[in-house]
Image 1: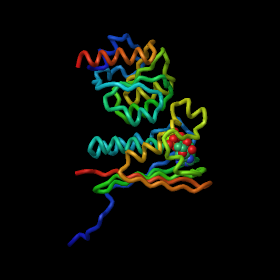
Image 2: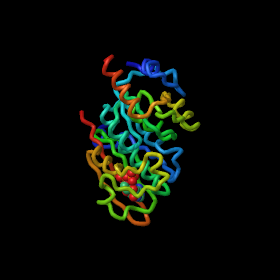
Image 3: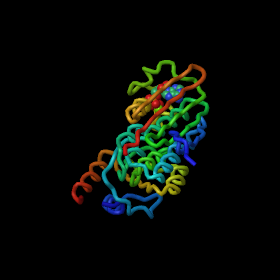
Image 4: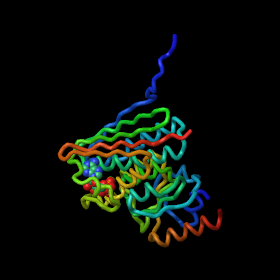
Length: 113
Length: 148
Ligand SMILES: Nc1ncnc2c1ncn2[C@@H]1O[C@H](COP(=O)(O)OP(=O)(O)O)[C@@H](O)[C@H]1O
Ligand SMILES: [Mg+2]
């Protein structure tokens, strides 16, 4: 499933790198501790987090994530947006909390794969 | 003319890290990852290097004044050496434990300081050496094997 489908199904708001919504999503990882995400997430994952600062872009880029979704309507900082646009990492915003968003994405990926 | 046999270094490059500046944290690791990717290393080699390099880089930014990363690519290994000028680590065994962290509130708020860095560096390296001198700094040497 690509990001565009997830964006549409869950009414996510895309904040940058919308040219990369065709990225294939292999699974997801939910977490706010960067070391844990570095160690345990995989290539093509969608990363669900409440961290909004620019260091999330390096992590997503190093791990080849499909994109980042910020929960609870958290907005990325200007620095984060600039970096993510440059690295072509899509950042999306959801009004759902982590538990609900993760569950919905999990179900979507299970259903359509 | 016969070429003398040497186990010569195929690639060497150094990168500078500024302590305390989180705006550029991760930039060295990102550069090293793209170099390795361009050289077509297997995915698991690139992944391991990215993890150990990132955690070491973040530690220099978090705890030291400045540091340097020396990347050396040999025929069978990738070596990442990280040397910093900083406070050093008083108790290395303790620092290596999962969950041990002296990170301040500002660092923790960004999602760093989980105390998993050194532990993960060790687990994702094929060989790992750490040494530290109080008041001087810390040196890490990570070796990742390239399986042919
Ligand atoms: N380069 C370094 N210089 C000084 N102290 C360090 C350095 N690297 C790690 N430490 C110390 O070791 C602890 C554990 O490091 P680490 O496992 O990376 O976890 P974290 O960075 O999340 O605290 C740090 O909290 C810090 O006290
Ligand atoms: Mg650390």
